[in-house]
Image (tube, rainbow, N blue to C red):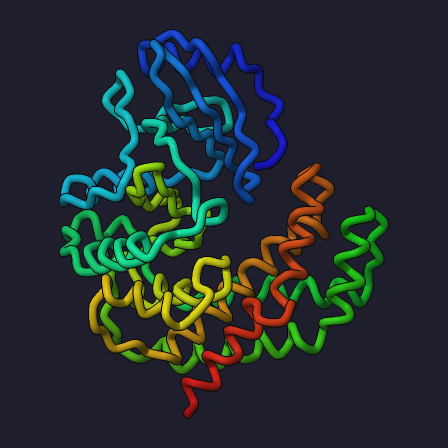
Length: 335
């Protein structure tokens, strides 16, 4: 969320004191992240800094998984802090309040990952993918279904463009762009649907995946220690669900085959299902286009986020970006 929500700082401080038993010295909103359901703050209490997340859509698994991973010796995890009521979140109006230690560092969008960071990321992902998840915890984690939801939303938005004109400036820009790319977007939907149909009936080993491991969710400290953050959407899925990000064009971390090779030095030798990789790269584009399309076309909410969302939408179609990379991966899977 780029714009501060309409919540009193004093009210947030009061609830922090109530739930975590400390007096807040300072509370600073952090304008980061693309999720309109989440606002984050830096909190200072007793001269110690914390990272506060206020999240509207909340599932308990988003705190349970980091706690489990930490208990299994995965050091690259920042676990939430327990409240006085022995939970790891607190109710706060329409939000859930989750508090973490504040780790000084920069994410993979703002700081170039070193070769050591990339190799370490491979090692950590392999550790996560090969963990034995207890059955009781498995039952709580969503499982891959190759859902058509994103494709259906995007198809519906394309149909709305045929009957509705949008007057809000950002929505009007997005309308014009989507019309100009209608055939390309339709082909994206069709290719993704075909891959989903091919993959769904095939048995594949499902592992614990982060599901959104782009540069923004990789934190690097000044000392070079790596953390994987934002476990809001864990899923049991083929390992390609995470591996699609390695060279997938979601960010600028992976600029060459050499850098991908460094990651796999850490991850270890593994058989990659290129059809699954292509599906997930297509599906990521579809999901992003659907979410942004709904945000911009179906509401006037978002303020400063709206223009940024529009820029993210059109960037997918630039040369060398996510659409082109997904297409190349799909062609490789057919060779």
